[in-house]
Amino acid sequence: MNSLTIFYDARCGLCSRFRRWMLEQAAYVRLEFLPYDSDQALQLCPNLPHLRADQEIVVMGDDGSLWQGAGAWVTCLWALREYREWSLRLASPAMQQIARRVVHWISSNRIGLSHLLRLRSDDDLKQQITEVACNTGTCVLKPD
Image (cartoon, rainbow, N blue to C red; front, side, top):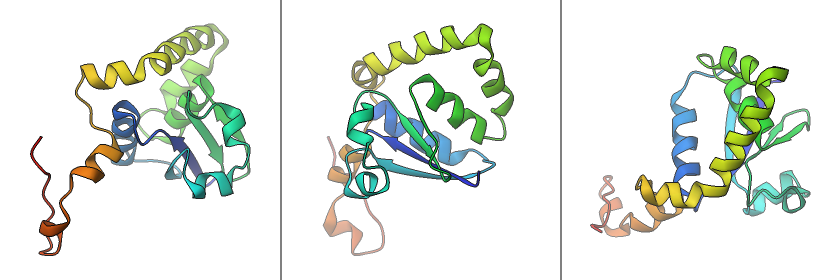
């Protein structure tokens, strides 16, 4: 496998922060992130709406393999150089149930956690960038 496509919620601060964090990490494979509700995501994976991508992360390999929920999180860790060993631990039979519960709790509470941690979503950040300042080559955020 040479690449992973991670379908995420661009309106969720936690999901957006996770995307930025993953892109900062050294990876074994190419990582592409698409908002789960984008036209490009639906073209790439027409079954996405049936996979509850609005509720849980969904990851697709370049071979068409799909993971969601805990399996998707473990796959994301598997792709990262510093975290592959952790992915193997979490995928072990002894840890799968714990990983599943933790991921389910985070997924169910991600919006509340985003607000609590003051994490801005990609969509929020896009809306705050002022068009006027960008034509100078430097973009600034509108004050809250």
